[in-house]
Length: 328
Image 1: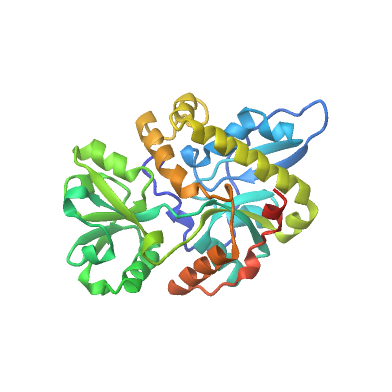
Image 2: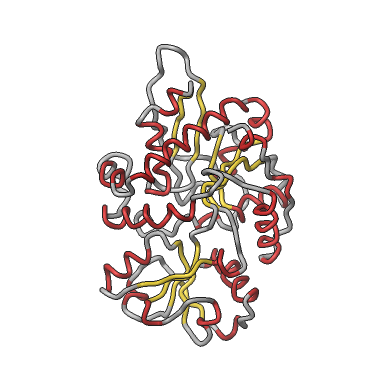
């Protein structure tokens, strides 16, 4: 989590239209012309994007004949807008925002892979509260950001918890209220807030994921336009292959790159090395798949569509394309 800002809740329920921001970072042009791909991240630079950074720095993309221009995201960035405006060839998106763009706005976008098999969005609490699932929230006070309320309430409903049995208060992504016991739990990504709470209050934190309680969503979807899928198929295959190599390198030593990139990729992101190492260790099992990073299948897609339906979003499998994965 960078600068204590929520992990991309800014675009959870927004439509399409914002332009990409940030400066590209990548290899200089090779003597032999490489194919350029503009890659739009979904958030400020932090360990969530380490695999792509490593693939740039270690030359995995260059070896595949690609020059990848990496664009950081931020609170004013809507990645679907970057794709539709032609500012990005590939972007990371979240399932809810993407589904709204496609099903309600008619955006011609296609998901060709998913970075996370399990969304890191969940409920964080002090371990002493013994909150292990939605039913344990009855009678409790939960801090939740406005843009996560729909998903949180859907999780309560799916698990038979009346919304009026849980007190919801605003959450400004500050660990203090949870660390000091002013609230019983908070809705956020679980990749850093548990660490920050423990650091702040000296008490052990715990969490549960919405994924495990009726809302099994992919997140950080590798997304392209339908035109890019047709015109740059070879480059997209090579991009995913090289990105996989970057993530394999990262996973071999989760401490190495958060430390190595403190003064480069992560400079000024407002997080400590310790928090970033925790982030990296926590995210790895949520990304891993026995079929390889970025894998999707028809059963998983159906689970996502069913989960979207529970939050009132009608979508269909046409926004997914498994053909690139089949070529890896």
